[in-house]
Length: 141
Image (cartoon, rainbow, N blue to C red):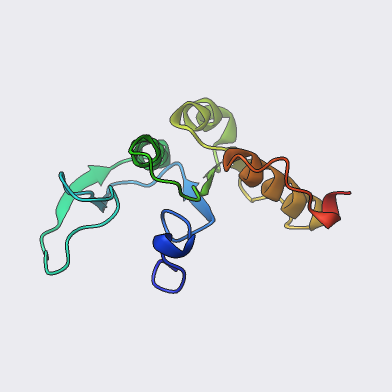
């Protein structure tokens, strides 16, 4: 997604408009950004090094994404941040930690039906996050 619609052309920071994260990840390795790079989500061309750490929860991953977005925006760059959806089969146990991590929307599993109302709700939340809640979209009127 970042290659097809890069950040410099108005693409989203992560290459995606929506990121859906399960709370209970287990112990999956993830890439961390490299200190000193221009963006917290890229590394220099030709730099094949990878820093790895264990992310044990979706809320930890969401917090990391939110922190990267805030850092990027604080640098004065304008970007389209992603809508972050936290999901869990153990909704009552996990909803508070997902909310505290910075998830914009939290779903129980199975996720809700993706109908027109749900789509419109997600779009409204995303546009508000991007500071574009004033944008008139015909489907909302």
